Amino acid sequence: MINPDCKRHLILKSIFVFFILFGILFTFKNVEAQTNTASVNIGDCYIRQDVPSGSYSNTGSSEGFSIQWYQPWMATNHGLVQFTLPSGSYTITKISLFLYAGGTSGTFTDCNIYKSNSTFDEGSVNWSSAPSYDGTVISSVSSLPSGTTEGWREFVLRGDGATNSLNSLTWGSTAMLHIRFAAESGATKSFWFYSKENANTSLRPYIQITYVAPPPTVTTQAVSSIASTTATGNGTVTDNGGATITERGVVWNTSTGPTTANNKAITSGNTGAYNASITGLTLGTLYYVKAYAINSNGIGYGNEVTFTTLNIPSVSNPTATSITTNTAILGANITSDGGSVITARGTCWGTSANPISNCVAEGGTTTGVFTHSRAGLPSGTLIHYRGYATNSVGTAYSSDATFTTITPAIVDWNNSNVQEITLSANRSFTFTNGKSGGVYSLFIKQNSTGGWNITWPADIKWAGGITPTFTTTAGAVDLVKFTHDGTNYYESGLMLDLK
Image 1 (tube, rainbow, N blue to C red):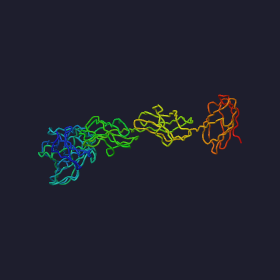
Image 2: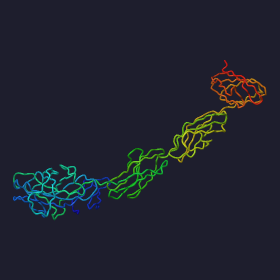
Image 3: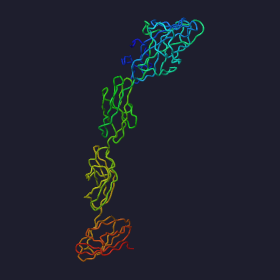
Image 4: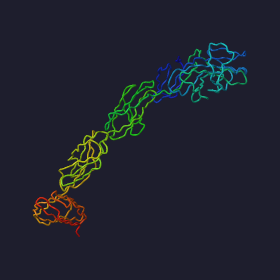
């Protein structure tokens, strides 16, 4: 049974909320405070006083009990205290015995608390010997009052301040204690404590438990509905910590260990599963997330999870091969889908940098390298091109690249059976007006830059079926001869790199 008049001790200034839990009156502070106290009535608090006959008389029904010093043989006087703590689960940091005390004559220098080795019964009037006790001092109070001085005295039984902390003392346990004075010398001395029988209930002995009440217990589930700038955080309050949930939600940050000081989304409710909308995110960014809940004891955080917002795909390495006068094979490499399925990929081309026109899908929807044939290019033109890929977030492009389509060159044999062409670009040759039986000579010269190549028409037949490699150094001159049969031009002579 809890004494409603017991003293309550709280160090910090705050607004108190009172409620009953586990049959104990608890006092709680505001959200920042987590250390609380509870007071418990003492079951037995009375004196077994030594007398010359060697027996121990029962004064347990008295409103107070005294420990007197008349002669050295009275040093064995005992004050006996017995109590049982209530049930509980919070973390205990300190347990103290509070006795209201005063002196009537003389001054005692030390009053010690010991652990009893056996239980005792208030109803037993006499013992032939005192109950035995552990010789280890648990708690001690010095400079006790004398004369008419009265006041509360705290004996710390467990936690900081205890001479030898009684760590076995916890929720639901029973303690039997002895109060004793060391032997004194000099004149008669007397000292008293109020007992549990005292008519002034506010001065009765009590036990004060200092404990840490827990914040809510929370777990974090995987983030869902992830988009480029939004997502949904998920959590569960599995235990409200014995107090009403005043706020719950999720917190997030771009570094580990997010708290409510960073970013948070709040949702209503008490215990159970919940979700909260996470907004204002940056695409393609890694975020750290925790569920949280607040009660009057503090903030409880769940485990940390991570997610990455969606991004546009990543496209690189544009390629161009098999370039002709108006066709080429273009491609690129999709290195990342940005976290969302690719819905289209292809290439774009134009005559200025970073084209977004003439875009044609290749047909695939996966990451990796792709190529496809593009037609309709203007001949002899510098072409800008790049690859692209599209997902639910948007379209991404590779860097800009260029190539030049081949310039056509028409060789009209009606003009002469011997002709020359100086190359200043890659050229694609077309032969016209050849006569059956005609023999034709073509000088091919590189300009001062060199490095130019020729695409030959399909009606030329090379010796051995192999197209020769012509000289491409600057200023080089090659000579090739053909004989026409009315359909094809047959190589009939080749001289390379004439000097």
